[in-house]
Length: 136
Length: 441
Image (cartoon, rainbow over all chains, first blue to last red):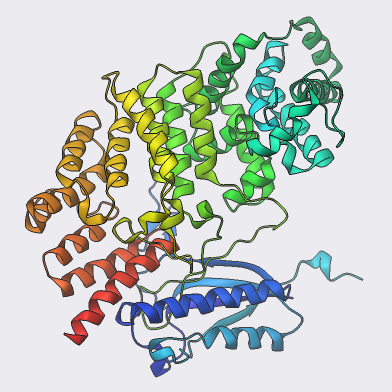
C-alpha cells in the first residue's frame, strides 16, 4: 500500500518545543546534520524497497480559480488565508499502516538544534488504491 | 572510423532525410536503431567515452565485426537499421506513403556533408518556435543520440511524458525546410540553457541531489528531494552533453566566435565541477572552493579557445562571460581575483547584452570588490529588487560592509525564494553562520 508522508512548513497540531526555532537560527553544522539524516532516511527506504518518491516544495505559490470564459483567473495570493503550508513529501510503498507510521515517526526524529530530535509532526495519508489492483 | 555510435546520429539522420524520409519519421527511426544497438551491445556502444570507442580500433573500417559481434562500420549499420525501421513504420502506416518514399530515394550523402548535417539537425532542434525544454529534449535525442528513457531520467519526468514532449516538438518544426540551416544564435541559447540545467544540479558530479531538510517551526525551512526514477537507466550529465554538442557545433561553424565563446564558457565553468560540491553533496561557493580540485587542462583548453575567438574581434555575450570565468579560473586564491578586470568585462558584457539581468547583479558584486561594498549596494539599489538572487547579492555585500544581522536576514529571504534545494541549503547555512556569529560576539 502506498502512503504519503507530508511535511509542513506550518499548520498541524501544536509543535514540540524542539521544532519551534527557524532553521536559519540553527548552526550550519546542525543544518548539515539534519540534511544528512534526511538523506539517510531516503537511502534506507530505497534499500528496503519501500521508496517511491520524494519532493520538496518552495514556499511560494498561489491559489488560482477559474472565473468564467474570457476573464482572468482569480488568485488568492500566496497562501494568504491558509494556516497550512506543505513543505514536501515522501511517498512510500509498505505493507501496513503500522509500518507507514513507524517510517513517519523515524522521519520525525530528524535532529535539530543541539542534535536533539525535532519531534516534527508528519501527516500520513494512505493512497486510494487503483480499482484494477484490488480485483481477484 | 571509430566514432562512438552517438556521434553518428545527426549524420545518419541527414542520410535518411536526404533519401526522402521526413524529419520526424527519420528521427524516430534513428532512435529505434539506437535502442536496438543498446539492446544488442549494451550502453557502451553508444556512449561518448572515446577510450571505449577506441576498442574498435583494431577491427578495421572494412572488417565485418569485432569479437563482441559489433559491426566494424557502425555508421553503415546504423543507416541500414534506421532505414529498415523507417520503412517498416511506413509500411505499417500506409502502403501509399511507402511508394512515395521509394520515388524520393536519393543517393547517400558524401562525407563532406557530415558537419553540415550536424548544423542542419541542430538548428532544426533548437528552432525558436520551440520552448527551451522541448528544444533541449529534442536536441539531446536527435543530435546527442540519447534514448528517451535517459532524457526522461535527466529531467525527472516519466518516459511517456518525455516521448510526448519530443514528438510534439517535432510536429512544431515539421514544416521547416531541412536544406537551410537556421539560426545559430538559437542553437547557442539552447546549448547554454542545457549546460546551466546540468551545472546547477549535483548530478553534474555524479552525485544525486541531496535531500534537503524540512524542519519544523520555520516557514523558510527546506524539504526533501529525491528521484523517482529507475536506477537501471544510466544517468545523464547534462553539462557534459552540452559541451559535447558545443564541440560538434564549433566543428560545424569554426568561424563563429560566439560558438567558440560558448564552448570556452562551458569548459571554464565545468573545470570547477569537482570543487563545486563537498563530500556531503552541499554546494560550495566559488570563493570557498578547493582550487586544487579544478581541472587545469580543461581551463587551458577553454582559455585557448577563448583567445582565438576574441582575436576575431566580434565580441558577443558568450565570449564576454567566458572572459569573466577565465579571470576567476586564473586566480590561485579567491583573494587574488582580478576584480578590476572582471568589472571591465561585466561592462563589456552589458554593452553587448544590455538586457542581461543576471550580469547586472553580478556587476554590482564586482563593483563591491573594486570600489567597496557601499558602492556595490548603490549599484544594486538602481536595479529591480524582484530579480532572482537580488537578496543573495544584497546579503553578500551587506556582509562585506560588516552588517551581519541584515546580511543574515537577506540570506534567509534568499533561501525562501531559492529554486533549487542545494541553493536553498547553501543560503540557509549562510544565514545560520552569520546568526551564529552575531550570537557569540
